[in-house]
Length: 128
Image 1: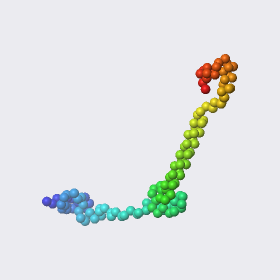
Image 2: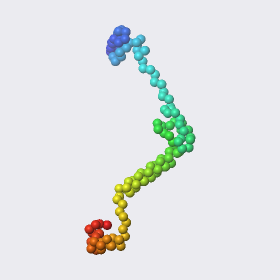
Image 3: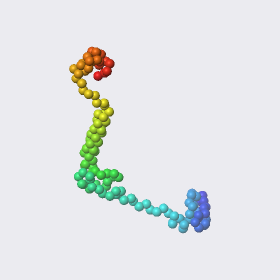
């Protein structure tokens, strides 16, 4: 059963089979969707590897290292980063710890005797 529609451009009445068209055959031609052109294969320009200088033909967005150098480069950068973090943590721990004068047992014992205490009483009272 044919349906009839009015063209939105020229106003003529035209016949459609399903009734979902808005333009007649003569007006529809300019409104056809443009053909989709294939996208170019290369998204990014070829780059040189940061380590070996080889050309990366189809690099990914932020790729700076070729596939052959990638794993060793990751290991190297991760190891350097890990060492730097370890050094920072060790330095912060050293700064956080108060520096106590290193007294020998004899010096502590002399201090305790001068105060009239035994070594054990002195250590219990003032810590060590």
